[in-house]
Image (cartoon, rainbow, N blue to C red; front, side, top):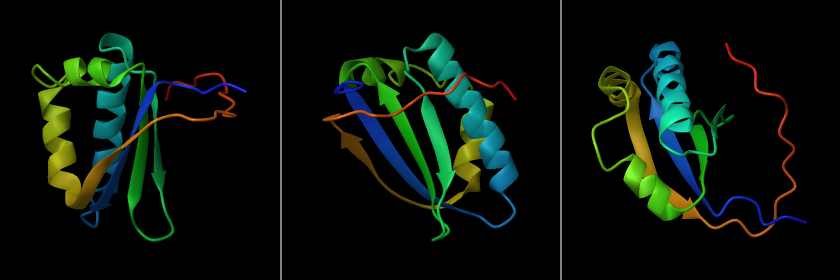
Length: 110
């Protein structure tokens, strides 16, 4: 059994009606840049049956995440589009990995 990544963050949002497609595109752009350039270990985006959107991002450490967000946005326009799409958000939850049985499929680029 693995403990998995050292650090993860859970994000939760309600989106403005009709903004979902733009949000997904902007979230995808930023997530790809964080993975490629800023040390992220990847992330996932889910839509719950309760109408909330959930994102789970993994990082090697809290320090790596802090450094990734210390400077300007990886993509200012995508960040703006995400902010405009969000109607409501809940505080981020920082999570410590305790046990990990996640199987990662091959990465598909869309």
